[in-house]
Each structure stands twice: as C-alpha cells, then as structure tokens.
Image 1 (cartoon, rainbow, N blue to C red):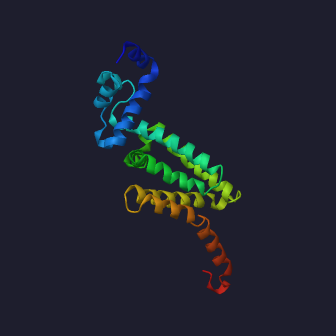
Image 2: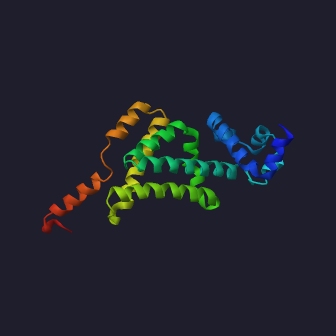
Image 3: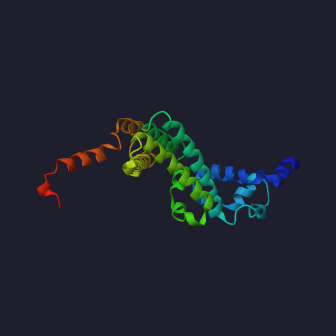
Length: 203
C-alpha cells in the first residue's frame, strides 16, 4: 500500500474501507471468516488501527449490517414509488444479490439492536419505508397500515429465505411474488365476514 493511501485512511477513509473489506469477506466466506485482524490486513493497516473505529468484530459486523439496511431501504423506496407490490420484488432481488449480507442483517445482531445504535436506526428506517408504502396502499386508513406492512414484510421475507436457502428456485420465487394477492386481502375478508355475522352469534 502506498504512503498516500495510508495518509488517506488516517484522514477518515479507514472506516468505510474496513466495512468494504468485511463485506467482501462476508460475501465470499460468511460472517465466521470476518475478523478485525484479517480485515486490517486486507486494507493494509495495523490491527490496532481498526480499534479506533470498532471495539470488536460484532461492532464491525453491525456497521456492515447497517450499511446493508441503508441500501435495502433505498431499493424498497425506489420500487415502492411505482407500486406497493414492487417492494416485494425488490426485497427478493436484494436477498438474491446479497445473501450473506441479508442473513447478517436479519440475524442475531438485530436482536441485540440496543447495543448497536447505527444498526437500529438503519433497520428502523427500512421498515418506515415499508410502512409508508403500506400507508399509501391502504389510502391513509391508519387502522390497518401496520397490519398491512407486517403482512407484506412477513410474506416477502419468508419467500426470500426460501429462495436463498435453495428450497425453491429464484424463478419460482419471482413468479410467486408477482402473482401474490394483496397483503390487504385477508384484512378485507375478515372485515366483510365480521359485517355479515348475525348479531346472535356475536360474542
């Protein structure tokens, strides 16, 4: 590595370089292969330099996951600008393009989100994009916006895992995604059923 490159790292570019190196290792070999020492070696700095930005491997992986959620949110937002169902396709496309990153994002680190503020913020932001799409889809009826968002999320996430875990082929996943009924169908059917229930049978 050149002196110029090292100087650049000392002036603020080291953190993104470490994250980029960790992402490459994650994509090729999984999270178990990522270590601060190996990431530092790939970037060309001393192992101790990494501790200026990450106190341990888990904080580095949390930063990688946060970056993933930011990119994920952008994809969902772009797809949702056209139609709400497009978010499901974008969800599946992201999982297929970055399976290791996708698993990391929704893995054990997310359950410990209180320890990683950057990750928590990025994860929440991606859900707010989905929530905003659901709100536009249901026409501002606040009562079922969150239900619609969670229904869409559950369907898309489950389908994505089936594909990246090789349970079903990607082509079938996209067919299912595009042919899926509206996430609001079950809600509307339950509402109609409740309206038709005879008073005597109502608890």
